[in-house]
Length: 176
Length: 385
Image 1 (cartoon, rainbow over the protein chains, first blue to last red):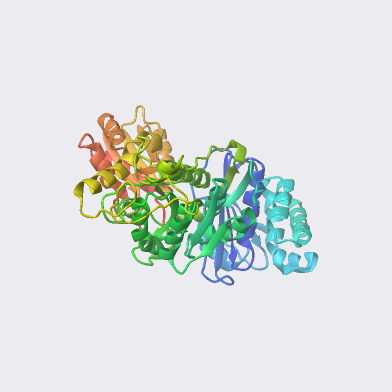
Image 2 (image 1 turned 135 degrees about the vertical axis):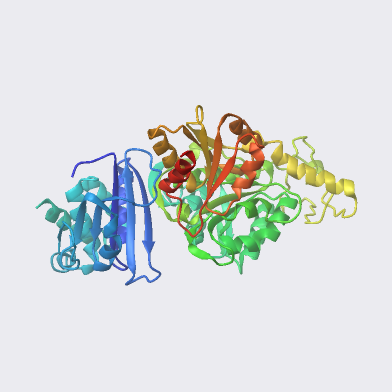
């Protein structure tokens, strides 16, 4: 996927999947690269189980918009998140889904991120990093190395390595 | 001095976090607050950072106590801040007046949410504009700043402390839930890059005897520090230059209040700040502030693409208000629109400033969602048809 001047990215899932953290890390990576970036979020009041959406606008120009109105990329990690956000994906935009948890009704790409996190990384909680790796490989919105730096800065101390492992496995999956 | 966050560096942080970090860089060493959405992140950050910079962050019993503690700390010589949202802001009104009357430098952050009452705790609004300026009773003046980006939240917090110290006055940083919670790329300056202002202290015992006297002719008296050996009397009652209550002499009241008002009004040029975009040949101008100014900026760019000569005036300071600036703009445009997240507050000030030279139309929005650029554009285009 080629870089345009501005990219709108929406990450959607349910609370507890780490969607917001994935958004913050992606935004941090963009900031590290000197790009302009804004990240906003919308979540239900429950910390687990409600829908959870992270919006990012990444641009080489100053950003005036706040929320994603026409997503260039939509990542859906749960059916709930997909159903409530699918209308925001622009025509021809890239839809990435967890292929075992989401049944999309439009063209998509993806992988069983949750199962990969469980079986290949060994920790289901890292599903957000697996999916983020996949998204970065597919879109080249930021460099792999910038995300790795952001992961080191943003994940809880002591969990850097497993999160990096998850990100790299997802990234590999995305280059296939 | 080591700071517990990156300085001279770029980071990706929330508006609330930016305010806390900037306050510490500005020299704030006392924070008192009571948790409230969407301002709690400021308090959380202060609770983490303050012990690491030999500062104090304290949770008070409520917002009345919070601003009272901040006033006390300021008189003890500390740059001090509190932050809240609608319901807490209402509780702070009485002591905000006390801070104005006693000429106490402090920064009060209001991360606006929808009201009245507890309203919509997690959603943004701009409904506290009039309250920020006129919420406390009696004749007065103060300073109100308003940011539209996380970087502005950072920079304006530093400016708020500088203005508070320079003019010995409370300064309100009027932001909102959207700016407070969104993350953006921010440059946090290194302390060496900053110009910080500290309040004027009495040069000698004689000056310390007149903590409310215009002894330098600049309308701002030097402020003594509690615990430094001066006998100082501080009261919300009308007082003379020595601070002694004088509650029935009209000339003393008039002199005091006029000086408190004039120290802001006469320095309007130094305080007022705004940005204009494409105003030179504009036939239509949108006036906006804070988060809505971003949508207004996008709307102006889109309107220009369609050949409509639109321009933007983004206000960064809401009080003191530059009524003359609005009149100058009104003289050369066909129409002024005011886009704000309330049912019309800035609108009234703009209308007064325009002074009949151009029609002023309100584009209001409430409910927690920010105007989309499309909403602004369509409203303007409808009128052009």
